[in-house]
Amino acid sequence: MTGASLIVSIHDVAPSTAWATRFWVEQLDRRDVPCTLLAVAGPWEGPSLRFDTELVSWLQDRQAGRDEVAQHGWTHRATGGGTRWRRAVGAMAARGCAEFWTLDERDARRRLEFGRAGLRAAGLDAVGFTPPGWLASPAAIRALAALGYRYTTSHRAVTDLRSGVRHRVPALAHRPGGALEPLGATVMTNAVGRLSRSGKSVRIALHPDDLTSSHLVDVTLAAIDVALDAGATPCTYRDFVEANVAVGTTVQAA
Image (cartoon, rainbow, N blue to C red; front, side):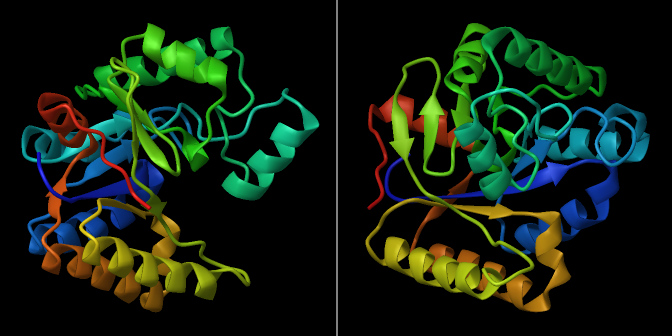
């Protein structure tokens, strides 16, 4: 894959958020943009994903097309342990969902295996992993590599776990609710425009809570349109990683 890429991910895919996931996918389909669906396999805000047969069937259909299903934690809830600093960062940055931020390798591996087994029980095969809140401990990264995951992501980069190459592509997302919401909307608008005009790749992350504000929805869709109009090629995480290995490049963003 040459040139700039646009990677759109839909976070927190679960039975309780199926309505929001479908809304975002409908908007992306209208723009012919494939997406990466980040699925929470375990019990979060209700039963595990595999028990929602309607959602499972829909995700299977999406995976059979152009979209990708990736793993997004097991319970999507913060765990105990870790230093006071790490707990504070997790609470501030991830709002209680930093499940993999303080884990040692054994516990990380256990939760990863639970999540992968849950997705496979639903007929879904995830090769990539995005930790809730984009936060993972070094031990969790080691566990991902040991278990054979293809890639993982952070807020600032996409990491190819086979080669160790770190593609520096920023993820832009909103912060619904509170004083930071207007700032987040402005940052997304400005950053997508700047990166697109300079021919750099960008990631846009969509969340269920974004739908609490029609303004945030409008801003997000407009940002996607800006990237497309600038010539960015829409793709999934898996396609991005595999294509950039093929051409031997590392995508960087300012």
